[in-house]
Length: 248
Image (cartoon, rainbow, N blue to C red; front, side, top):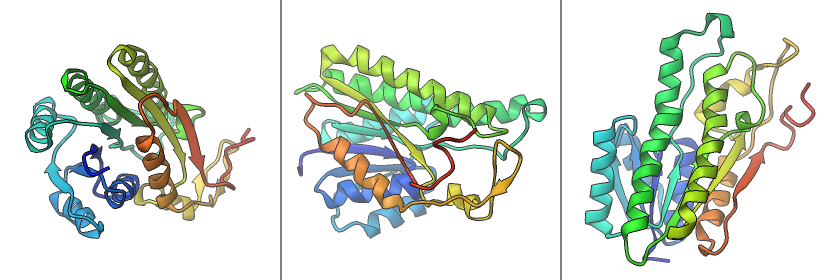
């Protein structure tokens, strides 16, 4: 597996870090991508191998995304997997009070950046020899059902599902797979408020269970290690007792 090359966005913390470490420990070479160089270097230092490349990048900026993929190509020569993981949100806000500025902030990272990175990865995988590769998009359980006050996050995660399906279809002729992992309440800084109480659809505030983020990293590694003849199209991994299944 030492000749397998991956890019992971949002690799400086949380799900991105856990996934990067799972791949690095499994023999992959990984380009660690995120805005903060110090966080990326911290991820690299936690790995049992030194097969990482730290590439600070704002993935909402087309020029920086182009530079990222040029750097990976010049360093490794090819790309076998992109984990399109970077994402963000704004505080829960009722739809009537949601502003266009809030909408654009979430769309820029959750959808525009997803497109930019997947598009660049697709072209690189299509044109390299041997051709092909795998793109894994980070969805969310919000790709299925919304939380209250989450119009931009929910809308973008529904859109990621459409992006995943289109890439999977258009990539067939080039041996490019695309799948999506939908994650519920992994223990990361982004879900810290779950331990204090989350607004539920019935208006109550409830503490929600979380799961070890390394379980997500292991799932991403499983998907990445499949041969290109096989694809996990959609998978949901979530804290078993989180209030989602059966939520009214």
